[in-house]
Image (tube, rainbow, N blue to C red; front, side, top):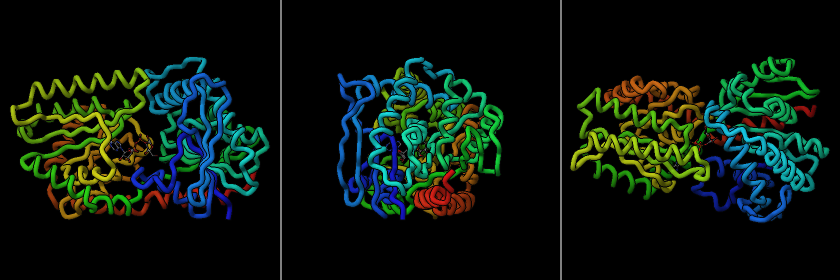
Length: 461
Ligand code: ADQ
């Protein structure tokens, strides 16, 4: 059995990751199964460090080795804030208008990938299976190959891959896609992402399509396939029935006994469609006044990437939209929007989901969206809430029994919310049962196993 090596921007200690969320737990489980190495950035930024250099730290957690590397400020700013979150994140979420194509960022992005590869290389054994995660580390395999690494290396992109003409706006787009050909297996969240990859490599680099999932270009063969990520359904169901989840449910149920609850939970990110959602809620109150003094939008948006201006601008916009609705429609004893700019403890989250009549998961673009899946698992099957889901979330390919909406269409979204609020019990039960079955069958353990089996089956090129 090969040893597993996971490489990601941030890492988590598997023994301390209970409550950290499905991905950390699933990767921790995969590493603990046969012993493994988890490698990434330490999270430490060294003020006056040297670019391309960083101290290495090693800890052991059971049979898992955790190795991390510090980054100097210049590298962190250009690799993490600049290229990863100022270029790749907006473009891959179709937001060319928000991208900051500063020519200096790419140098730091390459330097950090090279630094991490250089520190990882001596730790590798010939039979290791290497699994690299996300947009921060696209060139990792190419750097490892340049140092002579012959191992099987897989990549998983947690965010969407945009269509070829959007991708082509990144000045280094050819280099990025060429870097993907250093992997043996490239995993995407959704079929749409695989199609974009296939169209890009066919048109822009003249790749040979060997079969539906196999492409040859730059003298290498790569397999590209969708592996929709799931959640740890058993863990989330257990949290739903544990004390803190139940307490949260009871408290909210009492507090909102005379109201209908619409719920949004996410990081405060422009990909999540928050201003459009609040506008749709306003439209709901305007067009269906029976919801006034009843339907309440609880919007939890946790702080995220606050060092970037685009995120600060979004926060202001959202706060002013919520303030305006509360001013226009609020009563002395009712506020239409309850906006909270904070994290909710993971153990309490299922109670909040369960009390909601409708979940509004309406990103403008999202790789998958795990909140949609968590909401489904937390529902009472006898009286489930309704999921209103953006057709632009990767999850929409699987969760077809949700009410699918176009979040740019504020009027249409308001109509769908009204439909959700009025859905008869039998219809809610039918949809929920089908959604739950799908979320359960394709949970995070299924995702991890399917991906790693496919990687292990890749023939060395
Ligand atoms: P994210 O963009 O962070 O993930 P998502 O998939 O919804 O989005 O996962 C967020 C996780 O954080 C969920 O487990 C949720 O419960 C938790 N969370 C969010 N806001 C919270 C809050 N305010 N308080 C407490 N917990 C909160 C990226 C991609 C997604 C992809 C995932 C996994 O953008 O498309 O689904 O990775 O691959």
